[in-house]
Length: 230
Image (tube, rainbow, N blue to C red):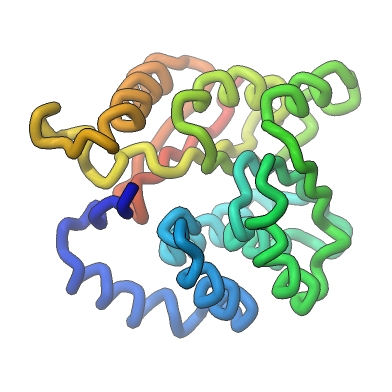
């Protein structure tokens, strides 16, 4: 599967934003990890640096300390979160692909933030269910970031609502699927149709969910920011 087109539909405008506002402020270890990820066959799956910049601002506005990450890949967003939260902050990071995570691990170690990360090599759903079983985890997380299998987004959402506190944020990546959510079905390349349908279903469900306040942002491949309201 190839990478999705930029939501802005203008490579030049995206390049301008990145070069003007994002890259000059990007932490050196993040830049190094982004460059290392670019050589991976699935490198396009890495978190977009402009989306990461927005995440940093939101984490700081929340004063987030305890977070969950569902889907890690090489760890760009994980490293970004670890750099942003306090020294005694904690991230539970879930991904069945440890090999990809280990591409980013040297940069995490170089940044001196490995102690903040609890990486669990596993599909996310059973781990989330286990976390929910412990009453001390209920509504104890400030922030969650989801960039994983799109057809499970609603399953993740139902569980994360039990773990993230009222006023906390849950961010879902790739929710506009390269803008194809607005395309006629026949114009969507066949390999992208399954996840486009998953994105459409999730977007409708999240729009109808009164438990969260939402904002869909056309950054990266589409960000949906949810604030838990009750």
